[in-house]
Length: 248
Image (tube, rainbow, N blue to C red):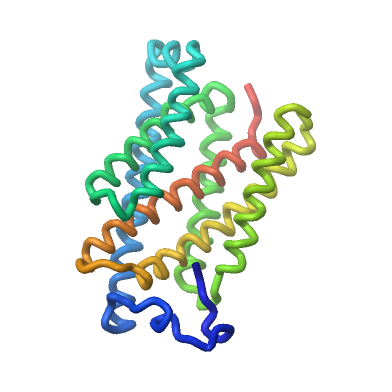
């Protein structure tokens, strides 16, 4: 949660006693943490890509995952459980355990996302990935360098996210192409905004950290931040792909 010092009349350090002795120490910690976040996120994307490629290259995996409804939906449920486990148990999990769960999620996500290679032209997939990467990089950079408090943007995007979830569930029954397009365009805007907000929030997570070991705090927050930004990127990519996509 973010606090605007001008509105509250209190310094953030008074609300949340910091484990960092000075702002300079916090800056160094934030730089180190962000480096780990993006490296870990990039590694997770490679794991996802490798898992997807394994399905594309294996007829056995294709039949196992896509010919068996129980397996496919079992994998999707496993993804949800892993995300919840990492997000909710971050304070209790060890760094090693959080990393294992995160990369397990990335691998399972690759298995289910492999379906896009059977639905969309490969050229469109590459183009959507490139556009998504540029959007993500630009908004992440903005989240790092801006002095503006993005908490209000984050709140608006979260409300919008719940809105498109409801709209997506409704469209499951209505099957409206127009509503689907609106959901995709609005979804891109929402996750682009969340990318900037979630990037900035990493610094605030460090500021509010309550740990005896500074290095432990950086490691745990880097896992949580990598998971959040990974989800933002995947959602931007999928929405862009549906907008650009030429279905086979």
